[in-house]
Image (cartoon, rainbow, N blue to C red; front, side, top):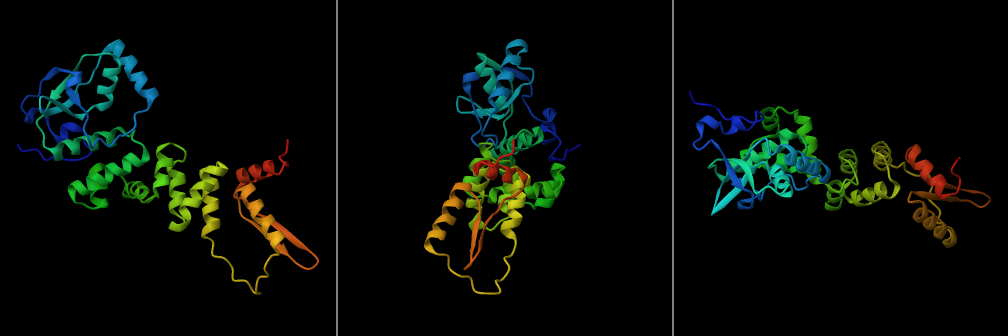
Length: 282
């Protein structure tokens, strides 16, 4: 009976072991293996890798990696974290299963294995989804169904690829979260760089970033009267305050009275500004 290949059901659903020749496990020299160049996971958490190294030292590699022939050695199809940990543990050989798969099949297995493990970074996951869309030339809705994911989950993940490069780098360095990233995408493109800088400078939570985004996206009211230009000395004060407090500052100046308006975005941002002004409550 012919099997249908499917996504989201594990590696056996992609390449059933009993349907492929050479399915036995063999001990493969660690140094003869090279990683897959299109591996979606680019970062390996040092702490989790160290824990796996310790487990391998105590119990060995319990699950074989999947490899294919490449020149005089082998290329990893899946299991790079186990291979890296085995090298760090000082192993010379690692259990492996040899599969002669095409470039397309190798990429497919690598992408889906990592998505199923759910330990990719947000940006790595988005890139994996994009690669699968291109690989299958399919729609987001169809891919979501085949992976067993909600379409909205897949769409929100893919939106991260529209972030400016600086925001993508901040997300990869864990300086911001995926929640922050979605806030950045909610403002105009020409405001996204400065919005990211504001999040980092103020240490805004996702909720604080959402409040700031709402403020930026709020349509300004049309002034009923023509604005009067500030005297140069007050314009200088306004700019110094904006720079020192990392927030929007307005000065209203009249003949007999005026006002200085300092904007803040949430309680966290208010506490930050009060502290800068030396007014932080004890």
